[in-house]
Length: 197
Image (cartoon, rainbow, N blue to C red):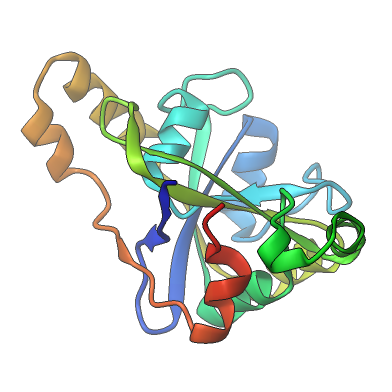
């Protein structure tokens, strides 16, 4: 049973999450400092506070359609709204009671939570899990229109760190990693999202 931990870059007001996109979506978003077409509001969009999990997902900003990695600062108020209005992506009897209850919650909730093995700098699995948050419907609207504080293109930095790893300059690479700390979850959210199954 792996521990579930939210580690993130955050301050008193914001938390940084990561997304990777193709150029056609990323460049307009960077310029506008919000997501604009061709970004589709009606699609589920996944955000991740773990930098190294994003590197795993995007192949250090090299996978097709994920060449642009964005560091997106959002309000902590928005982040916690998302967690409060979420449903786990898998059934947990102690949380949901019954399978039907979980299915009903999953259908109604605008936010979905998934836990995946966290990664080290070599993108190997660590012994705890990292959160992914899927936004849909009203949650996407709030994310785009209300929560985003800033959008930064960090693609070159991602590739720079990867290059150092390939050159076996691991300490140099580690110094460039974002400094993530355990996010202080309000007690009322812990049972809802951290239940270890």
